[in-house]
Structures are given as structure tokens and as C-alpha cells.
Image (cartoon, rainbow, N blue to C red; front, side, top):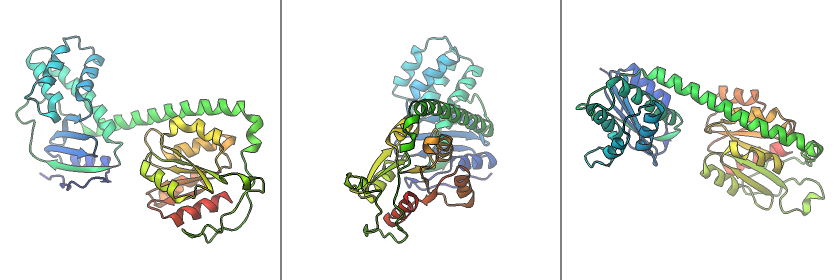
Length: 347
């Protein structure tokens, strides 16, 4: 029987959750996949490639209690709390041990235990599939070997369910975003003419990372202001946001950093940026979806939107064109790379 290659513990390497799960299924492995991202961990236990249990280190007791109530299991939940308080429980399988104990006590039967494990696994995998970086290790040691097994779940079906749920959540987020933007635009139609700022057509093709002598200016009235250009950066990585801000001279640029596109879109509308730098890979609403949404409204029809991503393949660039992005900046980038793409699009 084939086994999954074991990764060394190297934090913040790129992870591909779907690929890992596909290997687990196709190779019909026995063991536990453990994944870490610095702040949390996931444990996925399998027999013959089937999932028998999955756990997530964040609030396992709360998760078990919540799904207990969701399944209308009316037995005394206080016993669950007591089980988690017991000193003999292993942290990464405490909720599974609690379920086994509940079955042994006769509070739930095997079918109810299986349904509880399935619903909890969907939530655990939902979070797991959104991972972008971390480390993993696969071990054939069966921590659950001495415990009863209540189900053998098909990973493909679980992943398909999670992907459908993610798509539904994204559509809901897009709807929530679109409605307030439309309302804001209708209230500010008289101001739309001022959103397009007249920029001087000075050439900036040979901008270097240290030479700002070629920086163009807007018009004579704008020269008296502290910042010539407003740049909005949307990225869920604080490191990337700080890098962009440090690369752009604060005497020339007003940099607005946004880490949550769903909550901050109204801010984008009000600040009327000269350029938007938009990360592609973000939770809840990815960059392509957000760019497409912005382009549907006249307020953002002509504002340059540059996609910022670690992906540089043909398909990704084609997606960027389909959503009418203005440019493409590949991570990692230098100050020179950033300045060139910025001035190429604000002129």
C-alpha cells in the first residue's frame, strides 16, 4: 500500500490542500495527516483512504457542543464539558474521545456519533481548504487504533460539499457588497464627474527604484497638496501591505491599506483612488471576483486596477483580462517593479 510523502516541518511553505487530500484518497492510506500554520493545526485521520475523523485545534469543545445542538441531540450536554475537563484526554483527539465516551454512556448511538463526526468534519475541512501556507506531516501511527470507529467517509464528497458551500458564501458576500455600493452611487451621482482625475501625460517608462525625478504630477492645483496620488492596496497579508507602503514615497502617494475587501469597499468608493492594487488570493472574495464586481459600476469603470499575485501562468493572466484588470504585478516584486506598474497605469 502506498504512503503519502512526509514533509519536513518548514513553516510558511506553500500548501495545496486539495492536492494533499487527493493523494490521501487515491493512495488509500492509513494514518494521520497533521497540518500546521503557526497559529492552528489540523488532524485528519484515515483508514484505507476514507476519513474516520477530522479535528481543528481552535475551540474543539465549542465545535462539538454547537453541532450537538444542531443535530437536536437533547441528551445532557454537561457531560461533554466534563469529558473535556478530564486530564486523560489527548488534546488533538479530545473531541473524538468525548464522542466515544458519550456512546459508551449510552447518551448517543453509533449512527448519531457518525453524523456528529461527519458534520464536524465538514467544518474542519472548510477551514483546511482555505490554507495557503504552513507545514504538514503524514504519520502511519494510528492514534485512534484503540478507539471504536463510527464511520468511513468519502473525502471527495466532503470536499465537493465544502466547495459548494464556499461558492455560496462568496455569492452571498458579493450580493452584500453590491447592494450598498449601488446605494452609495445613486446618492452621489452628482459627484461622479470628479472621480476621474486629469493626469499629466508625462512619460515614465524608465523609472528606477531610487530615482523619483520622473514622477509625474497631476495639474497645477494638485501640486500644492501633500500627496499627489491616492493608492488603495487590498491584500489579506499585512506583510505585503507594509512592503507596498514602504516602497511608495509618502510625499507623493497616499497609501490606503485594506485587509478585508468585504468590509472596506465603501471606503474605496469614498476615497476615490487613482489606482487600486488588488491581491488575487483572498478569503471570502478573491481578487478576480472583486475586480469584476467593481467594473460593473460606473464609479470604478476607468480607475486602474492592478492584480497582485504569486501566480504568473497563462490561465491566471487570461482571467485578469476577462475581468478587465489594467495590469498584472507578480510577487515577489521589487520597488522598481512596483513603481513602473504604478506610473504606467496612473498616466
